[in-house]
Image (spheres, rainbow, N blue to C red):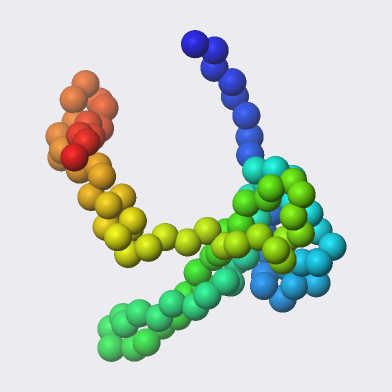
Length: 102
């Protein structure tokens, strides 16, 4: 099997800046577009409510404007499936971290 070393660079910016080009920019096929501040999540820490920006991701098709592409989403069922897909065995064997599949 051949090994190919590549570096992937995605584009990222704010919702406001992406809105300026949604009708004119066509991402290349497979190009990853990240909206840095797609949504805001809140959480409690030390009795205070804090917020963080949650990114949103689109993947270019090579023939659709950015505004016509859907955001990648994950359902609660998919999240539960993937969260339980790998389990960590908390041992290290020959200096390697060992994972098992469900």
